[in-house]
Length: 141
Image 1: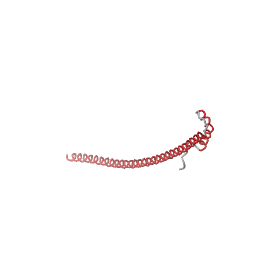
Image 2: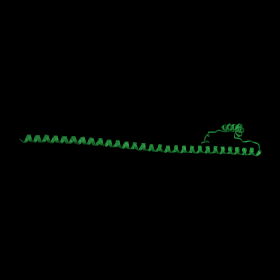
Image 3: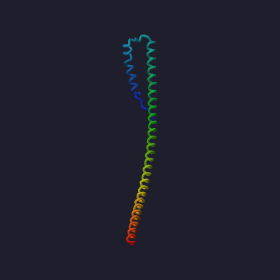
Image 4: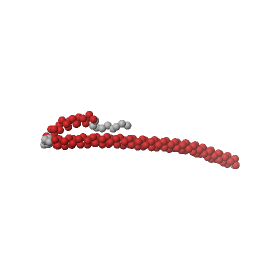
């Protein structure tokens, strides 16, 4: 799986640190601070250390956030796979229904053949009766 990629690489952090170091004196002078005493220097160094620690903490939080996002994507992938399986099951059921309809169509065709055959027998029977009645009427005269 590997570690998730973070927006700031180690080289980027180094560049930012160098930039801050090179311009820190100018920024302090613009803000009106004067570095006359050793206590003031130590205070600033402590602040810088705290800022660096906080940046490292933020970096860890970002890594954790990316890890959580990756886990969510994996969960969504699993859910999509489950939905896909359900669709496949529905497709199979539709195929079964199609087969049943084909069987029903065959049965209807068989009923149609039987009906046509019955109709032919009835028609033939009426024709025979009519012929026999005609012959009987003709002979009885």
